Length: 453
Image (cartoon, rainbow, N blue to C red; front, side, top):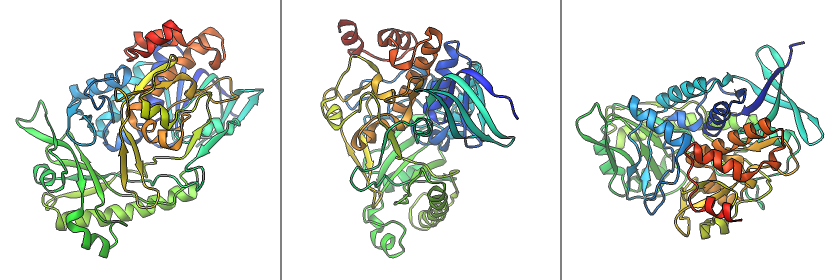
């Protein structure tokens, strides 16, 4: 029998939400362990895709704190070029290098005294009333027991909360359909100027590196409309005018996001395995198409990102559910723990085609702390794409900058609950906001409302 491992805060999930949560908890003095089922941490950011989105459609930055610190440290290493103005579907973009992202956050976790354990999977819970006492975790040694005072569920799929009995929704309430899964295609030895000219729907976002003399295109999006006949005939994509999103921080390397496999339940190991096979084959077909038809890819060589990237599975039912109306109004709340400014981004469950819907009001809406607290559980807080939201609202909450914002708040809340010997729903939100403000989180407007309430 292997002895149990004890800690103050146990974070499950090593994507961007879990990373921010673990760093926040560790910096608050909590003994923190981060569990990740993959061999490395970083999630979608480690594939090299953009950290959408720090700046509202009206040009105001509302995401700071740990998410901004990560960008600042990446800039120093040449792994980011900051927040770059764009005239496309968002006001600015924040591209990063995936491998350097993984390096930076690994270093930050270590500095916060977080113990990171990879290659492990949560398979069960032990409950004491409405509290999780321990998690059962499958590892190479066998089934291990991890016990914590408080838990952050940043698993993406809400695994911990569901095992503990939390209610949840998954996909469309009528059909059950979820957004498609994708796989970023990494392209090397590319001529990014040619590609941006050929594929970009608007002028590309341009930025400069410290080690390169000229401005380079770092983000652009467009369609493959010029090749509709070929694309449909050879079944490269299921629809005409298929959209493509490209980003980089290098002059001769490009990440291409355009693949999609539909009809997948990513909470099923069988489904996600099937999707990974299909996506790997699909991006190979896409790479051949790019090389043979799209100027700028003639000399390129290609590599698929490791594994499928998942947009949507479970949404845990919280004390509050973020709704379509919150987004349309740009709603502000007294218990806000951060702001979201990325538009609602929904990829059609049948075609994979992306559609965007702007946030109303000032172009931002608040994330209420209540949306991070599962109904009926005393020592669990959720972060990332499994927070409480309708499917429509999830189109905005699931993106990486919002996930880091909820992660920092969740890790801070779990640490406070441990230190104060309170359940997570009993945390004084004003005190939580004070700590978040002191750690660089932006709450302007919402915080004043909280103080007055």
